[in-house]
Image 1: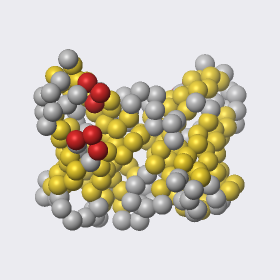
Image 2: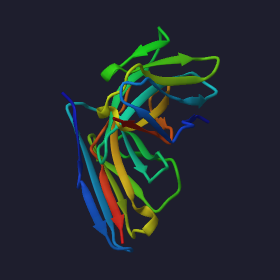
Image 3: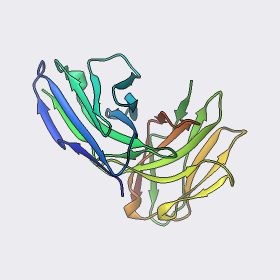
Length: 110
Length: 113
């Protein structure tokens, strides 16, 4: 069966520090991969999606970037965090018909 | 462009009462429709999905939803809610190629004893 791992579960980082969130999927190959951000009262915002290794599409301009160095690995990064980057970040994968979500990372920028 | 609207940000309801959570979408092409549930500090879990066929879709935990193409709606219903249904519910759409999933802003269901 397929599983998705996302870590860390919680993270507190100072303004201006770098960020790296990692997501890996097991049990499937060539999945579509997604990063979403959930800000309080604002629902889920699609940040990035990827249909293959090295193929990244950005949905909104922002202080973040994404990379897919391996088929089942998706990384969300920032060189310098802003206060506005705080939120709940969710990784998801899909092989068609529905999306499956990780448990999320609560990022607090202080 | 596709968009999903969940008009009710919060829905309070008493235990064992029926509930309907509303979802409307806009799209210039055919879409597939989903409802997800999120418990605090967790990821999203699929409740049900509409891909094709019967417009009445049954999901887990006694939930069902009806796809209404003319009204571009996909409302979620449950005839009798439990305390354990307290969570946030998200409606989502995806295009035919499933490359993207767009979510509504969510509805917090608060079931009171």
